[in-house]
View 1 (cartoon, rainbow, N blue to C red):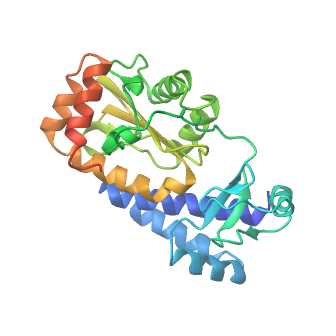
View 2 (tube, one colour; view 1 turned 90 degrees about the vertical axis):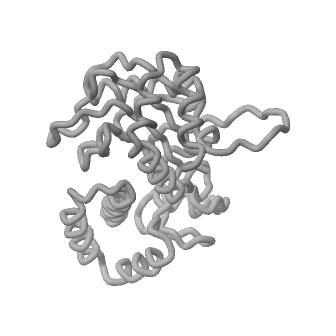
Length: 278
């Protein structure tokens, strides 16, 4: 990969984290993130800095991975010669359709496509992103890393992603940057760039609580593990806002945390998010 693209990916990651923190109402790390982003933008070569600014003014997601020969954000089938050039990484190339700068992912978990289903009512709300099979009423693991692994394997074992190991690695790398622990006992470990399907969410409960952020005294009792395709990055922020709004209500938290089985958890999650997640 071109060294400049590595720099752009790091910058993109910081911008995304800052957006997440703002949406979730977490201000603790914003000043540090703003300073780091400003420094990294200033270090870009002038032509790249100009292109980054133009793309950023339209959408904060200025990069796109190449997935199966397609720009993962806009969905355009890319010329084979361009895909090969991106893979070689000698220069930074842009998508001819959306103009986002392209990069190639060597190893990544993939979201498995859903089997075709009979025509029926359109799914709405949280039902679009999860299922009863991804509800874990009693997490076995007692620490952050173990919980992330447990939930990633649940997602893989239920056929939602092809493999768990890359998810675990990426989720832990993301946690090392800024913890995904939130107020009200929530944590939202997640992995971006999981192509091949839609955004997917698993929910695990821990009665004892998991210490997701070493800097905080509080623990997380509701853990949402989420995989996000690049094209759904903007929507993920809306989902994050909806979850934060839902579970700022103590009654909503209590109703989910009291569930003893996956079926009840799923029904309750649908009920409490009906007004906040469309």
